[in-house]
Length: 379
Image (cartoon, rainbow, N blue to C red):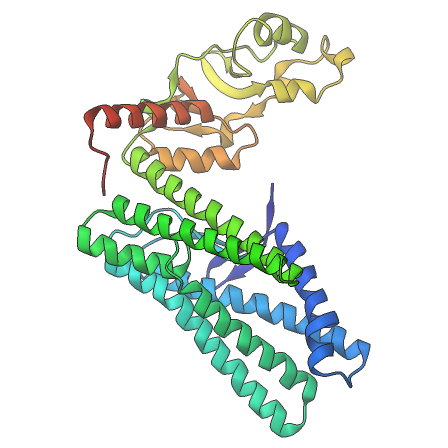
């Protein structure tokens, strides 16, 4: 697991990706050892560390506020927001579905930069008040945070997906063409172009002596390029899976095992003989769990003869779906399960199993069929 739950704000779950700690420490070091000592050379080391710590925390609070603004508008438009995750490059709100109207997309995207500008104005006010009162450390932190939030707003307005500017661009193209997929492709192309420009400018800085700034631009450009490609891929996948049910995508009639089978027999008769690495566990005609190769590997080999499937299997409670369930719900269940598989059960009877390969196979077949028809699906 790459993140953990921090808490909840305004009804939205807040999560922290472990990569966030890397950027937090880098920003803390940059503030404490570079920015504030350069701008205010007469203060103490303890003051610089305090300014750096407070400045770093407030900067990420600003990023969180930016994402909360997006999330509140999305929720007002009827789009469920599952969580907000802070990671190495800022924040990301995770939604279950995409917007259904270009106007909603425009509003949700626009509120982010507007919130950053508002936050920049608030910090500018604190800077002015701190300067009038002679509170140099407070004024110094507020001044720099006002600058960073204004810069964040400007950067996010660049027309490259998935930046807010890219989403604004997508909403306009979507409105004009009526084709969300085409709009996503154009906005993603803008994101890749912007990424290559950032990388190119970063390489140029490397040769002009600004090595640290150049490396950051290259890193940001590389991340933006990958994010643009991933966003387009996610949209295409959502399009393909829209309206698909678990029954359509499952592997029917999977090979099953009994709960009293020893792990030795499981390995010899199933794991070595079959092409599968996981098997539903059936007792008295009803599914009771799922056993995988990973379960077996967690048991010492000398215990395989005495340990049984029921001792190591995962119970069905968290890994079952109904045949009529939408595949998007199935994917959420798969992501939350350690086994990355679910059983399709109807009235206590096992109908099939769904794994990542089943989903990938469905997507591949759908794309091949669409290419044969010569007309991609649009929304």
